[in-house]
Amino acid sequence: MRDFNPRKLLLRSIGVVAIAYISTCILLFVRQRYFIFRPTSQFLTLLSYRDFKLPYKDERLPISNSE
Image 1: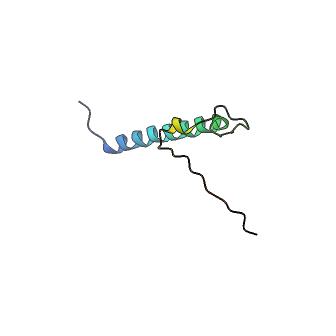
Image 2 (image 1 turned 180 degrees about the vertical axis):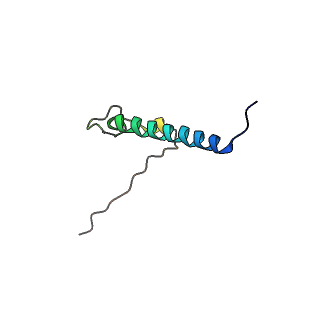
Image 3 (image 1 turned 30 degrees about the horizontal axis):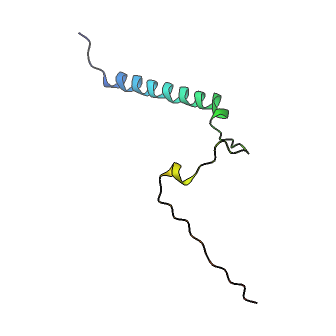
């Protein structure tokens, strides 16, 4: 049976974490153009108050002409 060596386990753990970190950095670098939000200048759908399911009340404000 093998002897338990904490130093070897620590080095392997650090190696696995380093490989995972470097792989994540490479993935983010390669795919970075897809993470940028580019809004369109056109409305794809026009939402109404019913889409948000919020209470709605039509209000009118009287405006007087004071000259």
